[in-house]
Length: 226
Image (cartoon, rainbow, N blue to C red; front, side, top):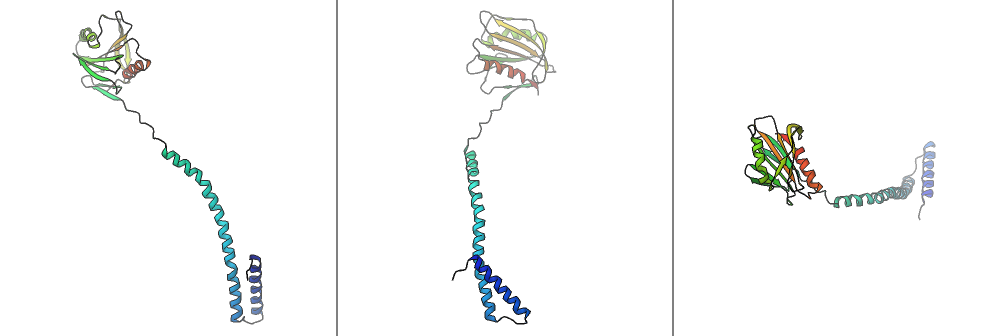
């Protein structure tokens, strides 16, 4: 015989009332009656437990279903490609002058006499430098920079006092021109504070891109004492 939840509760209540009446009259229920009451109560419990389990399962299923989209998003994020790291600048050190600057990694280093020249693959920009320690030595070395840069007939304007680089180093800067060529040319004598000073020259050839022009500015802007 099957008991519903309502019938089971009625039986349990009736059993409890019967037990209470017997105790009030001083009578004890027989062992058979006690066993019948216990069996009836235990038979009702599985129905209640099953109902509770069913109710508890519903929120769990709902939570699992709602969590699934988040798990898919997380998985998609894990599969996304990592950002490409930015290549750090290559610092060029001039120990004699006690300075350094950041050169683009693609620039190659060549030498011509006393000059060290940095050139990209397209050769639209050339950055040359050397050092000097005596008065008028910079002027003499400027006379040889044309050969290092592969130009001729260079004419220089009047130098002006400026502060250059990250270290705001005192400098004298002049603009030059190459006869017969639409090229930008400039030099700077830079004093880091010691006996050895830096002579810095750059050449922008005709057709040099804005990217190359900006690179030259960044190179000079990075100049600092070591």
